[in-house]
Length: 353
Image (cartoon, rainbow, N blue to C red; front, side, top):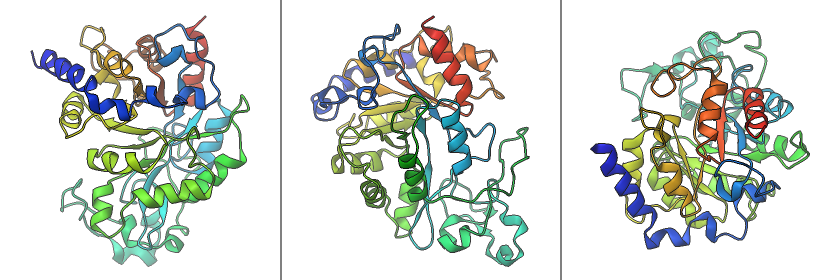
């Protein structure tokens, strides 16, 4: 019953007049076409039947410490179309590439005695005050540049721990600009604003710094291979009218999607980034989310496939990542996030065979 109600809610909102101003269908160039991909050649019902994007989640994070230039380089070597930098802000207002607002799990900060006294309780609303850690917002860029990245995911190789620096957003954009995908295209960059409300409360609103960095590297023009994403509807609504680049609403589950759709003016995003289970019913049939989004030109990019952590919930039941990718591609998604880009590239290549 709840799912039926939610599907009706989604359909009603996706057909509202507010969508006309923001849907990708109203743009001169749809995201897949802006990346030089050819519409009409993909057998599944993606937008314009365009080949889906393989998005390297935090880089090739299954094989290298996440959010490092080295992880992004390996992702491109494996054939990824897009690299994803998560963005947080330093004490001196610089965008740096970390998934979390804290540092203990992805850097070697615990081995830096000069920073031992900087460990403190959380003030990030996402985490309980009982959590003690080192917080990015307490450190200058110069201080963060003395740290090195480590592998945070249990069971993955620690071989490269302590070798790679924390890049700024500018470093990532410079890397993207200096490289090409395996097929010779401009590298797609897919930044996520992490905890923008938290950063704004600290005096560091994120929207303009993100857009300024993109402009400084020539990625601000309509049709540039950029997607800007966030889990926070107020941020998505704030940044959407400030740029012609596509803005993506991230949702962790069906309840979060319903909540985002219930905000005034929704949907005001150009793409949807749901967790993979949002797209399915327990029996493996489509939940209707892809179809409802596509009806108004909204691209759908689900997350995250992991070779070493198959999804346990129905309909996946711990099947290999490649099988889950095939199941999801058949719905017509326009791209997907994976920690193991080589698996994603292989799955896409095999789908139309």
